[in-house]
Amino acid sequence: MQIQSDTRTLYQRIGGEAKLRRLVQRFYKHMDELPEALPIRWMHADNLQTAEDKLFMFLSGWMGGPQLYIEQFGHPRLRMRHISFSIGEAERDQWIQCMKHALDDVIGDEILRTELLQALYGVADFMRNQPE
Ligand code: HEM
Image (cartoon, rainbow, N blue to C red; front, side, top):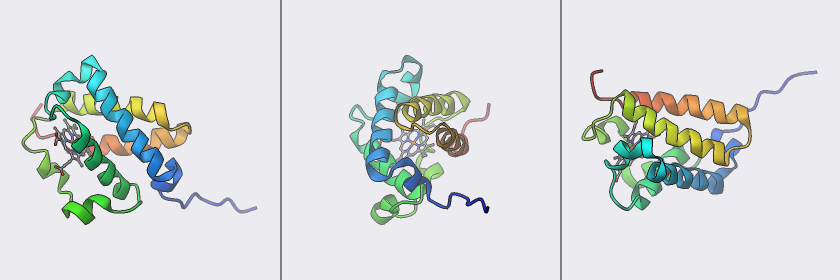
């Protein structure tokens, strides 16, 4: 018997557009409500809708689905777009904490959840722009 590896994209594995939309909704809900995420919440506009839409569009392409962010805004240059925010280890960890809760809320498969969290940790760590 030959073991087939899973060749589906992350986008397909999480369940596509509706699941991703739910994930980013939960992410910003946690950012809005977790006391430990207050420092990064304050960096954002009062209304989180634009941030939510943009993260949804970015992650869609990042997960191998439609490249919605690039179609609308061009190359993400994500690190450059975050340079005006002071992001160190604490801010990275707050962001990841919100994402961990959102993944727990939305993704049933533990292996997929862990895989996503690890990959997103790499992106969040790359966003750091403060010497520690
Ligand atoms: C590491 C900690 C991070 C902090 C503190 C942070 C903070 C922010 C803030 C304050 C904004 C502006 C939102 C607004 O318009 O009100 C923003 C935008 C954005 N963030 Fe982050 N972010 C972090 C990590 C990440 C990561 C890991 C990703 C992707 C996986 C990401 C994706 C985005 C995107 C796509 C935008 C919109 C950029 C634009 O077109 O203007 N961020 N972020």
